[in-house]
Image 1 (cartoon, rainbow, N blue to C red):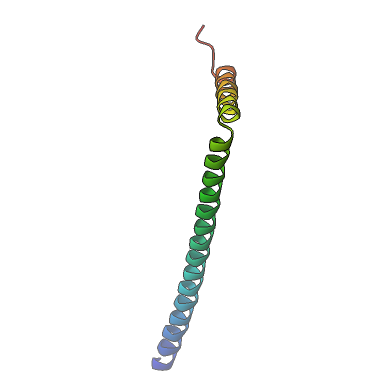
Image 2: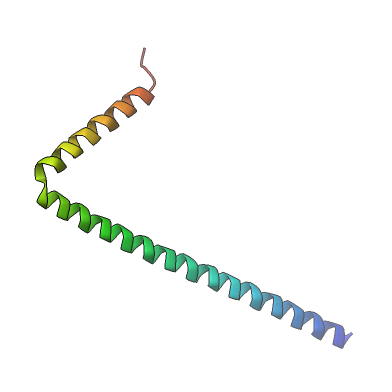
Length: 82
């Protein structure tokens, strides 16, 4: 009985170790993806700021058009209050 209990404990520990390794690998992957997303967002922000500085009138027109389009979409999707 002692041998079976020891074998069961070793199998359980091996399974727990595998699960912990997979969890750590998943965490590492999520951390890496979050870092990449942060870099992309930072680069996009820098690019938008540079474009706005170089083309202020166009940037304002794009912002106004985007706002008008967003307003129209929200208005179209909102239920009427009749």
